[in-house]
Length: 52
Image (cartoon, rainbow, N blue to C red; front, side, top):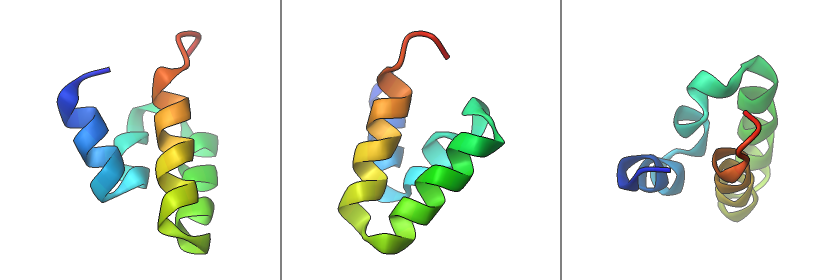
């Protein structure tokens, strides 16, 4: 996970997970709408997952 990805996930989480698939984008976007912190946490978890 690069520094720019982490920075992008803090600023706008849905943009950080664009290449991870449609489901990830939708989940992160919905969590981001519920609040900034859940969206950032979800984006960081998805970016740290080595299987994807």
